Length: 460
Image 1: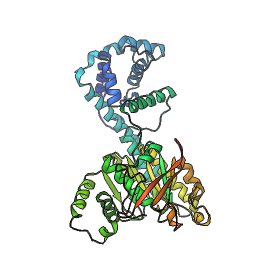
Image 2: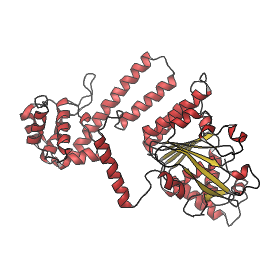
Image 3: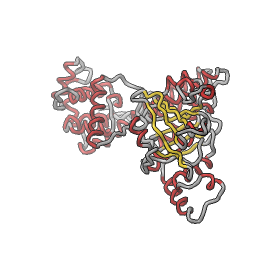
Image 4: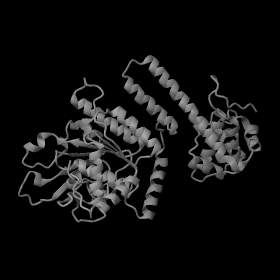
């Protein structure tokens, strides 16, 4: 049998011996199929030889039947014969010969790893050729080409050639398995927790692939709420969080995190007026924050393409559970010639694509228009989103922060803030109340539940 593992100009990366060993082992011990398909996510497209792809697909078909059949040389040949692919797959004799060519059946994971790594190299080679062709022929924006190149390499490295058409039966099975697991574990959260019990009960946590817009007028607390959510997710739940702060420096963010975690007055911390009995709390808070998978980027001039590239690189090293952008309107437009509505639309669409690509929730903080100030009832609504058409369309969840006492000195809701859910693509809308605690200052749930979360000192 001719085997080529050379990476010459005319021969793509491959290892036929490893492919044969994987298929032969499965024919000998069909349990190996579950092991490499589920654990290593080896697919038919990972095999270089077309006949090996056909044989592996036949094995999968046998296992995926309503009443799964045994996977051996006889059943595989029978399946290929029914599909009219037996001769194309090498014939009856070739399939039956595969088990005899297995060096050691116990090493199937190693063989499968070799097959997958060569597959990854072929995808990388294909991506490199596509990039080279685009660079040679495209006279477009170089930054856009760089972003496309990074995206292609990311997909090559993460075994993703783009979405595949899937039968609804397969999708339903996956969802039922997830729901059954949640039911057995008694969990209601299916996404990244915010740290606020009432909010998490409505949302089920921030869902992977979703774009969440958190909007308010200035001084309502939207930035503070977002930083607290980041803190809760990273410190209390161990979720890796990336925060892109285009408005506050990393030092200001660090002070907010410390004040929140230590529960001390943020203004005193900023001015260095920390009493001796408070220092142990500050040090303990700093230690906890230092161990948390929390990452901050305070670039004040960043475009959506650069933001996505940075997020993608970080996600490769530390799989993210949440990404926050503070705030949307400060992202640098890629094309200054576009109108403002079109610019913001490209930003929100870019963040939505990032959420789907990395399969993580993305929170984008947004300003509201001044139209709020001109109404008797100043509670925000969807139309108040600046350049709202595209933002509203792209967002899966839209939350507003509203404090009545900001407008009414004699408000009956002094010390309270409403979190209003104006849009929820996959669940209910409504509102919850948070209490503003003067002595921190900080936000907590109205019920003052100690497990419900905190918001960093100050309001943004």
